[in-house]
Amino acid sequence: MASNKRVMNLREDLTCAICCDLFRDPVMLGCMHHFCKRCISTYWKNIRGPVPCPQCRQEFPSRQFQTNYLVAGLVDKVRASSSDGYVKNVEKQLKETLESQRSKREDYISMIRKDKEKVDALKKVGAELQERIRADFYALHSFLQEEEASLLEQLRREQEEWEQVLQRHLEVLKGAVREVERAVGALQQAADTMDTSVLVELPDLNSRSSLQLGEGQDFDCNVFSSKYVAPIQYATWRKMFQVLKPGPAPVTFDEDTAHPSLILSRDRTSVVELQEMQPYPRLPKRFVQCVNVLGAQGFASGRHYWEVAVGTKPKWDLGVALEAVDRQARVKLCPENGYWTLRLRCGNQYSAGTQPWTPLRLVAHPRRVGVFLDFEERRVSFYDADDMTLLTSFCDGPRGKALPFVSTCVTDPGQRTQPMRFVHLPVEFL
Image (cartoon, rainbow, N blue to C red; front, side, top):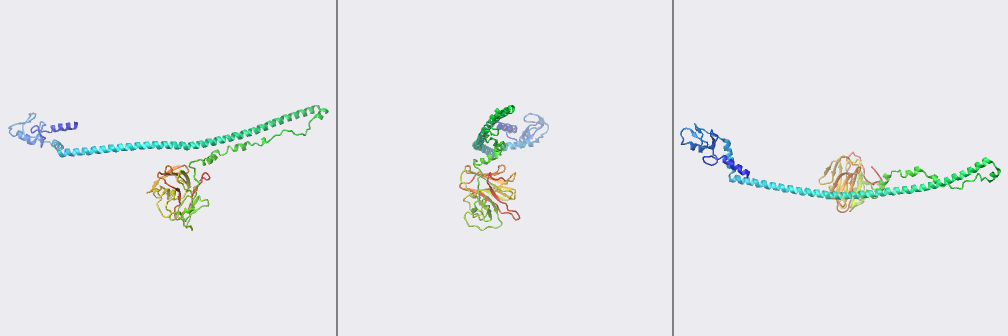
């Protein structure tokens, strides 16, 4: 409304007082009033002598006026804005702008709704994770409290038993002292009197005390304390592996799946590449195109964790593979082909096994890699086993039976082959 009013006022200001229409070729008189050039010329046509201004009646000795190009430009704009085409164009622009703003509003509302859904999902996941963390730590706390109570009870019982033994021994010693004191008194009296009758009544000087001193003197405080000054935390930590869920799985390699150029250790926990392929029985489960090998232990449910020692080996692949992967073909190690892997190339180029590869920026170079397989969450995660830093994680884990997977990769010419091995905790540390 205010805009329309301003336009109407401007139109009035640009209207000729003679023809009552918008200026055409506007000219300005000395009194600063404006008229159409043709209108003022016609108005002055029949006037002789000085000519007046039609508005203020000021007279001018000559018929002079000045063309006002600024006013002419404003008139053209007002005239153009008044045309049907211009109005339609403005209406079109307004409509398009309105639709654009409405679309933006809907987009923002949709983004707000999605962000709220993300916040709600975050709160839900956070609450679930809190419960899981509390449950996991409750199990650890319960185990530690039970171990503490058991050890303290063992200490209490053993201490009481030794106290009773030592107390009995102490009583025996006190009785022995009293007996000796009586003998000393009798002997002292005999020595003082040297009376023959007394000597006759003296007890046998060589007789020994009838009291039994027992075994209390065998107690060794150092031996007793050494049982409880031992590395209790380490011993308890070793026991804790029995209750961890998941605990480190003692996985081994399946020799029947190993590529012919791979050789396993006797306990099947270590694998190393050979320079030449070895004779091998042809089995459908054996890898023949890539230097791969699978674990002998497969999993189809639950949560599982194991560690692979990679040392300073400059390239490798490791992770999880479906039991149904094609062993006879060379394929990319990605979830679409049944592999969830972490890879290393050139000694410092780490990648997650996706399509395409996802480069990873790791602060440290892990010597041991932990693999966590969670069927409940369908998640496969990789950790630096030294400090349990998360390296990468897949949220679309396997469905169906899966096995540990290792590829030594082909050693570059001039480099020394290095083994990869499953770490059986807590027996060994690297």
